[in-house]
Length: 222
Image 1 (cartoon, rainbow, N blue to C red):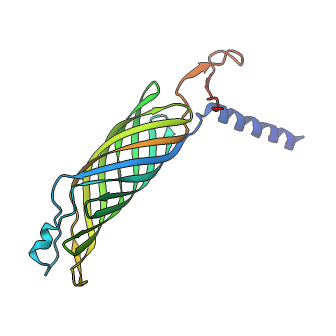
Image 2 (cartoon, rainbow, N blue to C red; image 1 turned 135 degrees about the vertical axis):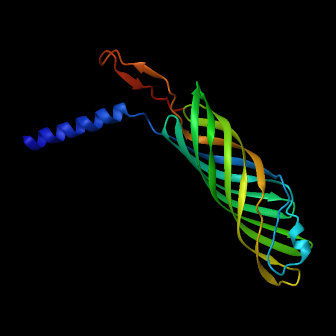
Image 3 (cartoon, helix red, strand yellow; image 1 turned 180 degrees about the vertical axis):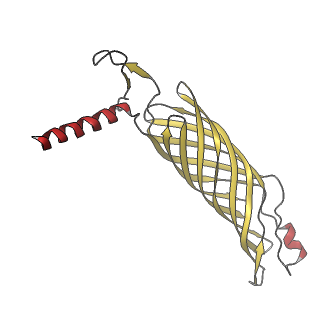
């Protein structure tokens, strides 16, 4: 009898907690990525020719990525993204994690936050090749328009790619350690999300008691 009573109380507490908690928001989807460097790359290492300091990486890059997000609360969310971009004689691979504060206005959230992570940039110029590790640090703002099962997001960012260790290879395939590849960078992204984006609207549950509020569940599309 006691065991049955404890079991009943446990189930009741779990059900009450589930009803009180807001449904989890999450999403995954493809992203269109763009970037533009604001200053020439500065690549330096002892003993390298002078022309390496003017190594041309190209200014504009564009590419695609795979992104994911989760809302910890209606106004706080975390993101992750794996992306690849291509420019004139250059390629860039990045893995970024971010945080955004979401300010809701109906089905639209204004986003304020930033991201950091790791990246590798490859480039070639007149037979020489440079590969440099980077740590991108960027501030972001934008907006997301959401319905219960899809969302569309556009953000712009500005930041600095902190240079890490790299390797410079000359036309004769001679390799030399190099540090460089850091620059100020701006860009924009567009992402289509697929997942669960429950509206913030709540309604009073008049059938179960006065003053009780319940999150309105979305209806799955047919």
